Image (cartoon, rainbow, N blue to C red; front, side, top):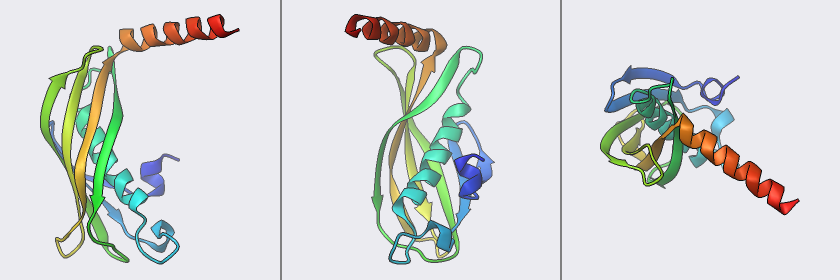
Length: 145
């Protein structure tokens, strides 16, 4: 079972520059004091950014990865439906090849209040670069032995 299934994340809309999904706030997602765990909220936000990145990925030659998360929690939740939105702010070439994407992410509660917001950076990496990195790691392991 994937994390999105465990968290019951449902995709609402998908475009190349905007993704929306929902996640029910249930006691299974609470921290010890009875409020929505911030990690669950971040998982929702990283999911919408990742789905957005997938829209620009050619899976025959590339793979998408989440590489940086900056999220601030502004309000706690105990019930209802959390709505996560990711909007593409910008893209730029990555130094090691591929493309970095910067996603503005926001989680809203049923009242429309911001629960959490921030920026998630993703990277689309060419398969050739992943293979090169695997060879480098293997060579480094051999040198250590």
